[in-house]
Image 1 (cartoon, rainbow, N blue to C red):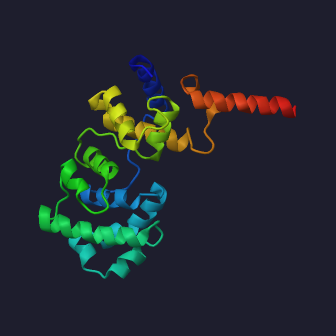
Image 2 (cartoon, helix red, strand yellow):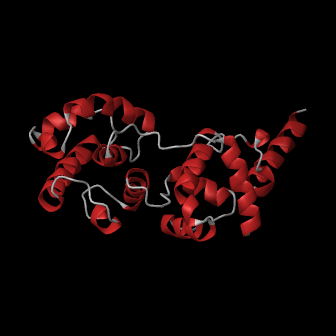
Image 3 (cartoon, helix red, strand yellow):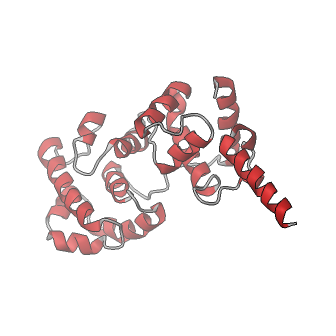
Amino acid sequence: MNAATLRQVLNIIADMFPDARCELNHGNPFELTIAVLLSAQCTDETVNKVTESLFRKYRKPQDYLDVPLEELENDIRRIGLFRNKAANIQKLCRMVIDLHGGDVPRTHEELTALPGVGRKTANVVMSNAFDVPAIAVDTHVERVSKRLGIAKPDDSVLEVEKKLMKKVPREEWTITHHRLIFFGRYHCKAQNPKCEVCPVLEYCKEGKARMKASLKKRSVNA
């Protein structure tokens, strides 16, 4: 996809989701880090239900260390992989206290050194908590980028991120990340994408193939 076409597609998606934003509830960088850590292989909706009470009980890193691991596990039991995530949260809190004075670090290198924090989580924290432009490639961003031809089908997550960073102006990285997530989450879904009413269908090879197959099936059953 060339730059001009990508600009058209991003403008259309921007019109579709003008209020795209981070949907994980949080009040500060530390809470956002915990929320994103919990969101791996879990919906934002479920995370928000859990953190509603979690963030009332645990307000700072030391709070997570003042309870037995089993208690923290129980507090996040509704979250997938809750045992592993509870252990990582306590390890993360220990590092934040010991190495960063109780504050979430602001650099990508320091963030990804924290237990349970990968590249995607670090990008989300940097862009949403510290206003550093970044594109976090989650399952929605990856799927949409590949369907629209921004990236190749066999590109790795890192390759998708690099291509988006190259093709999208730096000052638009963060908002583009949110808009692509909304587009993938609410419109271009994994199983049932809304191809029949998609305003960017003409740019989507997979979508056009789906529509062609759908029309063929209808004609056969008619």
